[in-house]
Image 1 (spheres, rainbow, N blue to C red):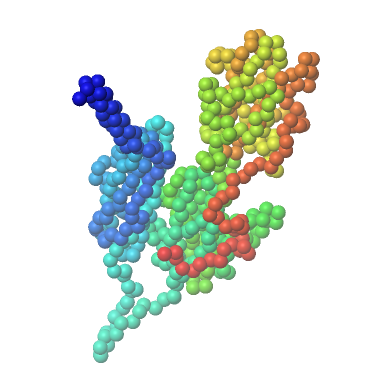
Image 2: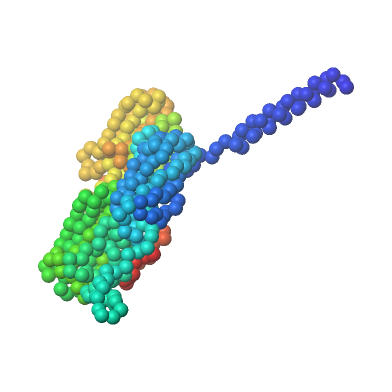
Length: 489
């Protein structure tokens, strides 16, 4: 074979092998996960008293993290970590581990215990994960108490006399036997027999506002509500709530209600009892749970957090803004977000750049034309994107929290502007318009108009929830959902 042809064939073969090697490495590269989650299987497990059962957990992380595991248990259930309490997860990967749950030997068959596993990580940023699961005590359920009465004939068994108190949720007389109360639902319970207590549990989300309401109580009882955290520390109590209608307070309304902003993710327990310890078969009440809102500091919704100008968090990512341009619908989101723009400044000309949040104030005005959560700060830097030229928090001489800088360049070039929020606060509802004005020679009214005429009025955009009823749930006896008298399976 011709030597040159042979060498050419060898070269082609070598190139093909290298392409296959690099191609296989490229195709086998892991795809980075888009979220950091923790899951458990099974979610509920039946375990005999004195025995253990295995729950398998999986943590998936979009970043390289080390998680520390801890437990929140009820009913005396003990969680054991055979592989230790430290779990390392590589970026875009997952880690699976087993936790053993030990049921105390004295546990009553049929009881269920809500459990929480917490996974915390401090680096690269603080992150807390939690997952709920249930331990059900297996074995035969104890029968009702019976007494044997000796006679001259065959023995007869007679049930102990007493009121028929079952309301479909019993037994629920302790945190360990607490029944689940779902959001936007109502349940019908009975305080029976005398001295009865009903316990319920729900999963609370940090920052959300929850209301637990007794929307109906039959004559003869005066109920009280008490709320406990996952460690059974009492965090709220109410006996009578007379101000259901602020325009028409009713001192005779003795039905209790608790409204609270939940401080941390986890299970929360509700205890219902009669204030005087009464009880009977006709002592019926309805209880309902509503998660109202996140209030003025909502939880981040990533799908609507970024605006059309992202990514612009660094000077080298600055978006161009041209003279007399208005950039609308900018967002300061998430927490710590910074928006950078650059503009070409001509020596000797006068430029004014300002933020305007007035069109996003909404119908419920609290402080004039200040948008809830928005207090912009503007920084002007030189052509290097570093050297500080000017800074402004609030526009001088005006009753506004918007920012404005007036600038006359001495040298032609591109200059940079950063917009942030005071305290680095950010969420998807903090929006603003950014305007760059090139003032006309001798113009005296160049700047942010006091009447907001440079921006068109619009209604604020509120994201619509998914998977929830179209009608608002109101905690009132006439409009609460029809209560159920049986526990949810």
